[in-house]
Figure 1 (cartoon, one colour):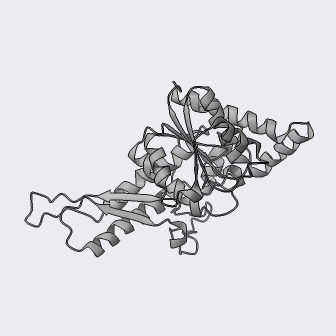
Figure 2 (cartoon, rainbow, N blue to C red):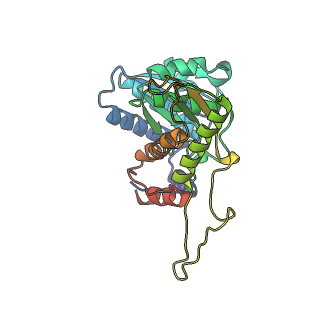
Figure 3 (cartoon, helix red, strand yellow):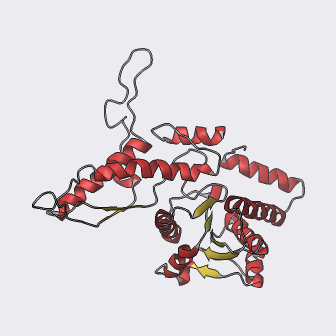
Length: 308
């Protein structure tokens, strides 16, 4: 599989247009290819529930075409649409309406209850929000919908997620990974000081995420001089690189001590290490990447995508 940058993708689109291929043809071809990939990944597609997260750009149009093709394959498709689409000018949107494909409008689902209901039964989710067109931080309905999808994936690991072009939040030009959501539930037995406990768990999570995504000691190859001797050079997680961490507890008192307490200091880091690794590899897996050395820095993610 050949991986291209955003600019290379735009150049390919321009060359296709120069050869007479219209946007409609390109969209139809992309959507059909995505539908075939979903069918291949799921095996038997008939009767399966597919949820398409569609943005307002070309990526969303590809997702809508994929939904139509999946219905032709006897699957059940629902579209969650964020952003305005002109019903008179947008051919892909017109097709969705004409076929009567179930549509959830983000602006009419302020509590995300409809999206959550759709996620509960989804066998696969097609992320057609942003693709290579991402030029801004994830926010608003995009971010919230992806957070809900992330939670659903954690509850139902068998649910397939396919990013159309690239997963929203992954920068294909730099390899930078954006943390969209993190949810943890720990069993620490009896909670004696909830505030201190919360701080310990959050601190452990951040430590683990830093180890997986950025922290690295670097020496000069010739002199042996440490090059990451200060926090100006040594990457650590900061508030602007992390989402709001949601921490919950399901305490079962320990039966072997009078207070019923259990250890909490390392619980955050123990879970964040494998979950962060699996999240990145899950995002890269559809591009043929199955292994990445630590830390999973933007440089390594980019190189893996280029070499897949």
